[in-house]
Length: 133
Image (cartoon, rainbow, N blue to C red; front, side):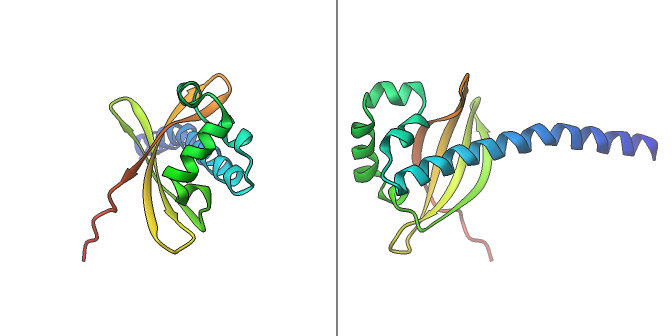
């Protein structure tokens, strides 16, 4: 019984950093979406990784790409954070986004940790999860 209690406490202790990490990642993605809703491309650009910032160079270029390529992120009506997974050493947060027309989109956000916190390194459309009966 004592061994089971110690094992359970160890599991809980290991889960706390993962939960904090997940909360920080969700906060970063959510903050960027809020910046887009406010048309604050400078702030939205601040959540992009150094690689993404290097590709787009300016907040205006970045904002134009998001408006044209990811309109559901620019003006989401609802956002749900699903699973955080590690794939080939990279962390991917699955996000369900409902756009202004009520269409549901699934996006994978690749996240990297930098000296200034979590940053978004890529966003890719995902296939909807399979529905089981």
